[in-house]
Length: 552
Image: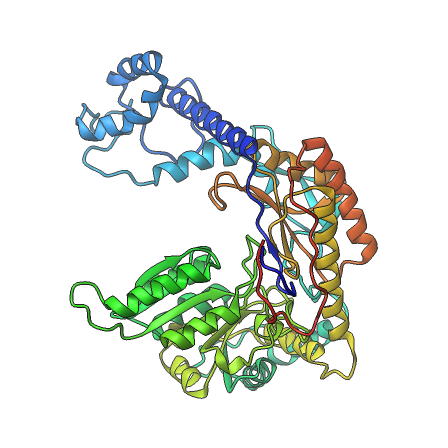
């Protein structure tokens, strides 16, 4: 292990072998049972309650029954047999069969299979309706199911829980205070929508004020806003690169970045998560060999990264990425959706966290849903870049502008963070979040859990591994008054299912301690304390993290 000042500290402990084995066995058993139940549904022994491919022809039921009895593994092959061997199919007018001859499958077979046979079993752990502000605490509407997760009915009960699952990093998800008062005033003055796009009279003075404030906040020449965070990436990236260009994308980049990259028409190459050596190796190869077949130089090379990775809790190794950018003359697209407001001594994201000049970043992107209690996103950069996007971006031409009350929520919260309201409330929230993140993460390490990510990340993943423990952890925490998010395959690798905690400046030390007590109790109940790593020792220097980049 390298020695020195560990201001940048991350941990990704390896999955224990026995946990990986039991996890694979658990998923294997669920898949096997799912195939058996699908067979029973196809022959009419079990009612079909979901959208699936048409049933098997009645004339062939005994054929497939004998396959099941002779070899269980052949269950997975019978659909392929229908297609490959062109077995007899019923016609459209056959009332006893709904097979339509000559049509390809309408649904994606694996996704449909996974949803009805695995996800449906534990669907109560997701999509829980709430009936309050999603602040430090919240009220969940209790549901019940009488058909094993196919349908849910609301009851008249409410469950009051501590909220450790929402993106509310600076605690601005609130229905009282100066932000609420400012939003109420703007709603009465402007209404709830601008009724037009940026290029068709939808751009109001409040949008101009917001664009200028964001540019000042980020330390860039100009900025523009988009009413949807996902579209900020997917609709603007095609304006920056195209055919003949090359995009290097971190393998764990968000779906909006993946879609935006695909829409550009550029060649896309992924590199290992936050692995600078792998990125440099592929950059060097791209520069040396050029485009495939003709070996012409790439028109542009764009490196696409996130500030904080929301599933891993890791932080981009930005100083090293910028070193490669300068060395290989590439551009950098930085998505600060989870880091702006939450990272750095002034809350200006990972650029602030590492003490880097914002002008070194070619395209700065972020959203307002995580730290500002609002919605939408922004692109920041040079005036030439922003003017280009204002004229050519689909988000600027076809999308309506941000609703004025939404824009005002961003303006009010951003002014508090910047200290323009004349108080120190913004700095207090930034410091509170930082203290909560480090304290919460350190305590979980001490308890013996496997925790992923950076010491300063507001996203704290706790590894659960086995599929049964995903649901058990969520349900047991809810019983004890703790609301959290659990995530499993396919959103994560199959042996890295996890609970994902999101810290907030609205969490008091007493709330954090109470949540830790609940997690400790449930961890003992479910045998989740797998860690064999030494307790972390990280540097508490808060000037910036750009001293010695290290990773465990």
